[in-house]
Image (cartoon, rainbow, N blue to C red; front, side, top):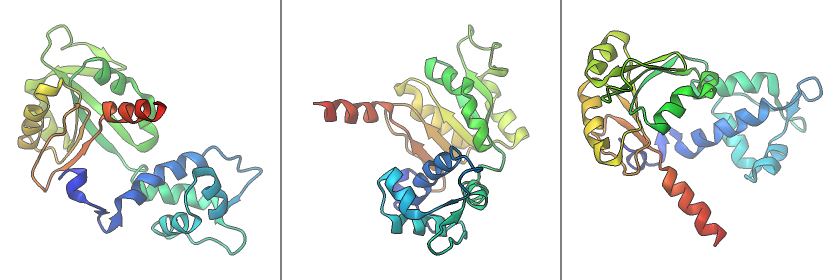
Length: 213
């Protein structure tokens, strides 16, 4: 199911809330806990430009309750948000398409903070197959299915050229992948029981350029 098909809810939680939570988490982790142990919703509202009531409602999904006129205990809130997001659990993925973007994602160390790890990358280019990127092996696409079944990997990342994205997505689904993170310019489609997140770098770039004008 695409993000548009998901509409507004993910397991009963508004999708915008889920998208805001990592922002809160990143900010809270920048705070010096020796100087600040509590944070209020109005204070966070000033940082993010959100409504304080909305922030309180978002944090409510973690079951952390703030103290009147004091706010939320930061040491309690950080792990609560990590648990809410699943960042404290192991989430493994396979990536297909070891071009510049695919290689960059494979090298990116920030995923480790979320429990997310690209276990292996796949391609059909003989000059790439058999190499390693940041200790991650690049294997031939033919090995994807067998390894996904053996290693119980259910997340797939697509960084192939636009014209191959849907084909790769279809293969991933047939090989047991349940969630696809697509970086190809054109959105991919899948059955409603498959989670699809289409991330368009070009769309974000277009917004920046348009606003500049």
